[in-house]
Image 1 (cartoon, one colour):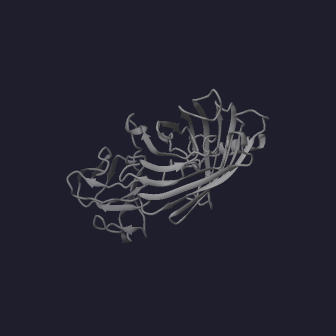
Image 2 (tube, helix red, strand yellow):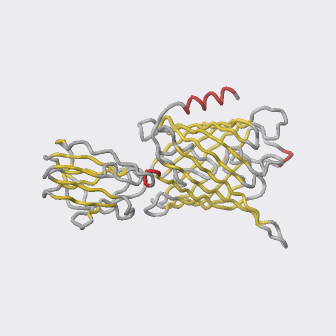
Image 3 (cartoon, rainbow, N blue to C red):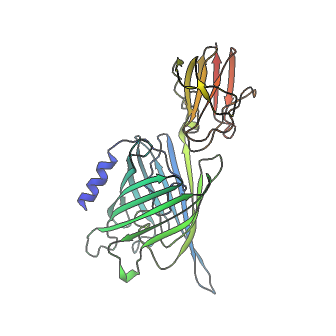
Amino acid sequence: MKRSILACAVLITLPALAAAQGNLDRSPNVSGDWVVRPGTVQFNFLHRFVRSPGPVRKVSNFPTFLVATSLLKGTTIGFNYSTNSTLAPAYPNEWEFFLRARPKTQAGGFPVDLSGQIGYNLAAKGVDGELSVGRVMGPLRLIAVGRALSDPLKKNGDPQFGFGGGAVLKLTRHLGVHGDYVRLTRLNAATGERGGWSAGLAVAIPNTPHTISLHASNTNTGTLQGASRGAKQVRYGFEFTIPITLARYFGHKPKPAPPAAVTPGVPAPVAPGQVPTGPVTGPLMKSAMQGLQFTAATLEITVGTTIEWKNEDPVPHTVTADDNSFDSDLIENGQVWRYTFTRPGTYAFHCTPHPFMKGTVVVK
């Protein structure tokens, strides 16, 4: 157990940069140890329920609330809280406080996403840990996990280990299917404990960072303990993810844009909505959309300068002039759009799907 905890702790001390993941990036019981982008608070609501046999047909609810944020790039601190846990006797409320990290990512050139979590579960009265490895192959993302859990029943005090994995298959940009299976190496026969599984449909709400999972599972809560212990009874439910960008509400000012520079060999500006081709011969200034805001709200340039905007958010954005003099159409994640300003003046712009995203170009 000490070695498992130490391995998780080493992962957590390493920095990385990754965005919080929605339901189209993971399965209901295997999170892949996603991390939150700095300046964001993640709120997820996992709700599962069962119905008793007739004639009563009573519906019992099993909600789990997750709240998390980032103190350092590539790390996340947070908690899970369930109001109806079956993990341990006399503990109907289950709390899990955790620390996560993602030190390596495919986006950063590593072959896989490597992540880890360590936490303390109040109901189990012990430390739990997880190591996670994920890889994207086209529309398919695979995740493998290894878990070390404390024994909530304290029968012998020995740690329990679990292994499993999950998969997500994206059918479209807004729709996917996902599922997983995790099994403990030592099951509690007295309680009828089984391997935990889930399967369902993942949906991304267009033009928002929110996602929904509609799924069935034989597990109870969203903690490491709850997501590892299956039962005979099947529960049905959903998970709704809500990332909240604090910079939008606390007066954060985007960094000023760097001076424009001539960059030979970069695709030239073209009409709005088209793909840029050809070399840029004049000054080029780069900006971005990140965290549901323009990273440079005011851009000061000279006549003939081309501005390149890159979308670094998981949702599409536009660069649209308030007077409609230019419009990028939707810019998807990872794509860029360029526009050359040929006349002096002040040009206010915004994002059409997210009108609170605003900026200004001052051309001298």
